[in-house]
Image 1 (cartoon, one colour):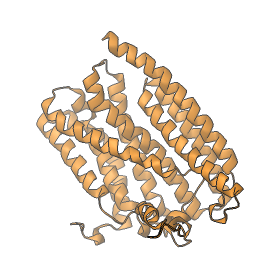
Image 2 (cartoon, helix red, strand yellow):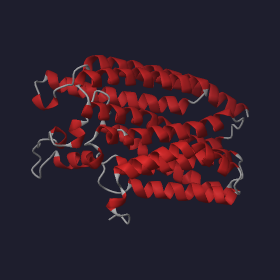
Image 3 (cartoon, rainbow, N blue to C red):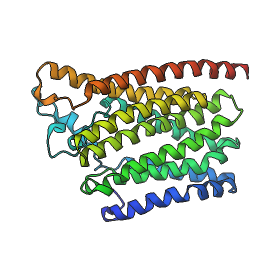
Length: 323
């Protein structure tokens, strides 16, 4: 049970806090650049703990997916009607051609574990990069807390509110991009530092980049005609591919490219299953318009980002061993 009253989670308040966090990001960065290291490390730990607690609270729309998995089979093993196919279900209403297969969300486990290692081990480290990225890290955790509040059924009824969760996911990615850029511009090639700091940040940055596009597509599918949703889906696949390639190559960031490939591959997997079930005359798995084209776009994006990630990984690893 949440210790925070549900009345606190009002769309106007969360929208205001989301906007305020965007506006405050530069000031938060400056504040941490001049703060004592113990205060910085404590703030990182506190922001992470608040975010982790918020994520653990029930009631989000994605929680319906877990209910679906539990309801897909009865006690005697017979298949039941999936919850996602219920026309009154929020996930069904948000269904788009830019929705990943369920396995993709398992990436949250290494993200949370990796960031836990980062915020706790930083108390035993003196690296100045911790101070340089702290403001962005805290901002990202605040955006994540606000996302858990906004990705709920009460935000789905009106057009402005349905995009609040998208802006929060994008805020996480923007804040982590700043932190990622700081580390990428540094000259450090220490393996331990890479595993503790850059790896979890890269996973989180890459996944929230993709997740913000997924959320955008869900909101558009909910409130706009299917033709608009299809165009946005195509644009997301192409834009996600180009963004993955650009950041992977320019920052020599193989993990980021790998995460984008993971997300695009999961979307392609979901589309493939839909199309295969449609070929089997399964009426419950009717593919959305544009699924065939979207499948090809996501497959191409997956291959390109895997290639870019592999090539940059070779160069990054070579530099690390030279150091």
